Amino acid sequence: MKLWSKLIEGGNVFKDAQGQPLTQRINQADIPATIAWVEQVTGIDFPKDRWLGSTGRKPTSGDLDLAVDLDKTTKEQVAAVLTQWATGQGLDPREWVKKAGEVHFKTPIAGDASRGFVQTDFMFFPDLDWGTFYYGGSEGSAFKGMNRNVLMSSIAKQAGLKVGANGMISRATNQLVQGGQDPDYVAQTLLGPRATRGNLKNVESIYAALATDPNRDAKLTDFREYLAREGLQEPTSVAESDTHFLARLRDRIVNRGYVALVEAEEAGVGGRAKGIEHLEDLVFRRGTQGIVDALEIVKHATEAPKKTTTAKWDGKPAVIFGRKPSTGEFVLTDGSGFEAKGYDGLATSPKMMADIQRTRSGDRTELINLYAQLFPVLEAALPANFRGYVKGDLLYMNTPPEIAGNYVFRPNTIEYKIPVTSALGKRIGNSNIGVAVHSMYADAGEPRQPLSGVAFNQVPGLMLEKPATPSQLKTETNAEKQLKQLIKSQGSAIDTLFNPAELRAHKITDLAKLCVDFINTKVGAPLNGATLLPEFGEWLQTRVTPQKFRNIVEYLNSPSSNTPALAAAFQAFVLLHDLKMYIKQQADAEHPGQEGWVMATPAGYAKMVSRFDPNAFAAQNRQKNNTQEA
Picture 1 (tube, one colour):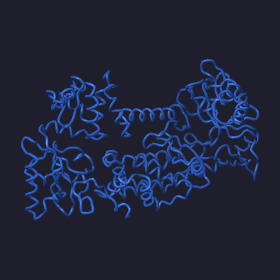
Picture 2: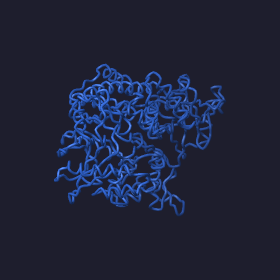
Picture 3: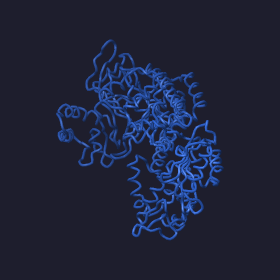
Picture 4: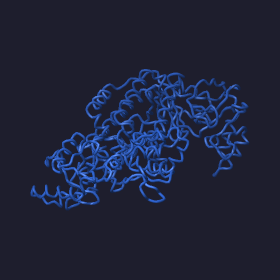
């Protein structure tokens, strides 16, 4: 595709007359032979402890960073040797050797010009031990060495010091402190008397060393601000939130027998969705593991649908009703009232609810009357000994009209058509108020939980509809086979494509999220898998800055093209979508009229909704709200 080869990043030292770089990224496997060739040319040994940054430590490197002992070899001497080599080969040294702070050399990969060139940067240090230590810090880490160095400086600041390429410096005198180029001494100064340089290996090891430090928060203040500016998360917050949430999820589903999983209420973080993921988006959220997870979710959902798969309702407004745990007093409110901070939003009477509504903008007369009608009905439905709160969505306040054999109603965006003769239709016909209940809270401020163990009282005219579950689901074996084959043939490439360290190095950390954002622009139109990849490139040009677009293009084209991996990710997306829709159609046939379904399984959770049907909820909701999140 012309799009992916037309533009490339322009930050390399060696460029042609048009400003295009003459060097490329280098594969990890080619680095030893290339450095061995550099050693022959320069006469300098570069053991692995002199390979800096990502050199030899990541699947690919943008250049070769090599440490040189300034006490033994000067910049001028290295530049002279390289210039002499170029002249001896009949080459113009100006096109091969550059002195710009450090010495840069256009290096043939493995000594073979036919394989392309990589930029080698020779970095000179008066103290080689400190230099190699300072420019490390990325091995075994999700963070770059630069992030580690910022963290060290943040900690040093609390002690009136700063840490840089020349060692640990006094902020008062701007002079190197005694022992300031000894990594072990620096570790003891920053982290405590028992610390060693190993504790400063990377961001994660530093966080581990600070775990019991009483001054931990003060030491991390500047670094946390830095992470916020860079859009990065602390290592402990990532691990803790994911691990604890999945542990709670598994406990709820496996040990406590919960069958429905509610959508998260917090805002999206990084590449994550705001709520439960679409099954097909998992490939962009988690790479190859996302495909594996999706197949496991499908396996559990089809093997035990009654325990794992529940319907979603598109009702409005939300109603939260219950009894205060401390007094048993009945409460009826809405989402804003339930989460209120500056006032008491837990209305214990229709009058109190009316007063709350009148503090808000707009005409609230209709809502005030609605909640007044609901108040005695929902109070009667809730057992006197119940404590806590139930959340639901209003479906209708009068028995829906019957049209062509269906009860038809539109509580929010989606129009439901429930067959009169179906089990649900019969319940609707016997009611004049319908509320879809789906989740609960132990108390205000407590986490939202799936609805479980509530035996509602029967109230004439009231239908409290719990989530529907299909009795039987089958998988689509052909799509599963293709996905498993895709994992074997392209799984490694997909993971390389979405490698966080590589994405950070190219300043395109949100590449996976951009893929999802692009997919969401397709909501409401038929899905055409054959055009997704080229259309993604055209969309990117209007979505990101020119520099970022060049970064993405360069990343997709070198060292060996990542474009096939991106094509494979889009292919997996389409296959997962087709698999999801095959299952959804079965659930819809048994319980017609649903917005969609949630699969909550021990392997994870995903939602099944129609995104690319112009008449489906996702398309209507997106059009109504003009949002990227569908």
